[in-house]
Amino acid sequence: MTNGYVDIHTHAPRPDIASPKMLGVHPWDAEKGVTLPHFEACDIVGETGLDYACEVDHKAQQRVFEAHLDAAKRLQKPVVLHVVRSFEDVMLTLRGYSLQGVVFHGFTGSEQQAKRCVERGYFLSFGERSLRSPKTRQVIATLPAENLFCETDDRAHPTIEQIYAEVAALRSTTIDKLKMQILSNYVKLFAKNG
Image 1 (cartoon, helix red, strand yellow):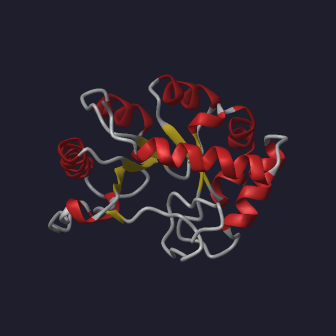
Image 2 (image 1 turned 60 degrees about the vertical axis):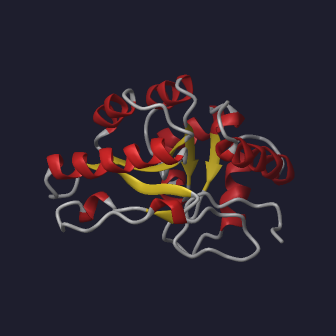
């Protein structure tokens, strides 16, 4: 039984918090020749994406990213994206796919980037790194509630409860209202299209 919180992307799932089971090959590992997992065993494909701040070959990352998107499309599963200095290439790649749902995890982009994601119906997820960025704090404050998630990623602190508290304060809402909205978004993310 969950306590009403959703942690859309975490490396340390808790039994009292709703969080999807993810499987994927991180962009940092794209050159290692790893075998893609059996995505049937997960709730959400990822994290996957492109990271141009690391030294992994961009073409190798692109191949692995597209393989994840192909699987997500075939299995009608959402994806969680890792996007670092690669926003334009990720958006261009996504144009070729009709996906169950798309979550940009650990979003630290601009208001203009957030607007483009919202126009496509994508979700943005915010965690500790997002909260450190003044430009992203403005995105959190103004993002349509229907496109919002929170996460802990690979951090034990702050907790998801602390992330919600800070996001709720930035949005001038209550934690309970934020929990209800994010839970609604979570249900929407996994609702089969058509």
